Length: 420
Image (tube, one colour):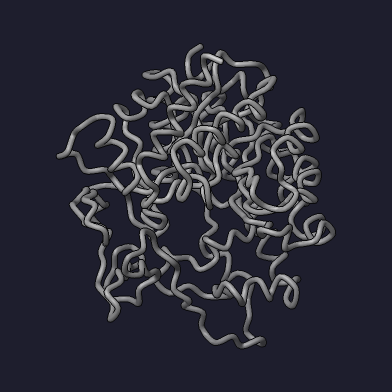
């Protein structure tokens, strides 16, 4: 099979010739730039190569074509033009991470150093406005800075939280069409796109790190409190957001047709380590109507399969996600309560493609031995890949400081699974 055929088999719950593999197609299936740098050095021996940081919020490194071929990765992603900080991925320049890793960052990736030695970064690269995120010293990625303005209940306007939801520009559409067409015509990879503005209440997006002066409810704590205390406000935001997302889906469906196989819809997390942090009733009332509209629109216009990312123990919510029309579940956090791999495959394997779950990124991959990593990866592939319906990825992004020996053990286990 080609990579594209392999992905299609997985999406159709057919047995592929081997397990389909993704690293780097999306912002929740990637690797930290430090991990990519050391992995690339280990397998390709090119000490002078600088990895591009294509997702600067999480500092994810590009899986370039040479590395993709070497590792046997099957899926390529196309993302919106602008990063989480509102600037384009262009005009690359050198940057050194806290641990000394040399990388390339976009030209408008402008930082200053705070009093504790951490990096501060600015929306649209504009250092004349307050920074929107901080990378603490000895850390590997950015955290949003709370820029919540004092709230005057009499002046709260849901439209302040809708400023970022706009129709795609001609440049945005041209970007998606150009990149998807190139990958479709020039390669045999599976194709994954990230839809803009279709994740309702994604807490990584609420602070709007790309906006110079965000208005509305932007603090993480304030947002979560508001889902209970200001539900009408939140629902009005979701209604407006959904209307714009539907129009953008129509635009992209017309531009891209069926060249795309997978559409990332939502990265909103609904789970904690010990279970959901939202009741099934609240999910059904607040989120389900909008996700159903999104999925129904996509499925009515295209053959794209829809992808939801939600960390944590979301077992009680999975049937509702299926009712919403989602085709793919990620990251399949098997370490969380209720998320045991065999149980998930048995109960939901006919309805969902599992994308992830391949190795525990909280414990096994960063802290286990290579032998423990190898064993867990082999077990997860055996469970999830039975009768198709599986794309291998780790449980969320591989962090920059994960031992290279463990990453190599993961890929060795993937390769060896092809012969079992």
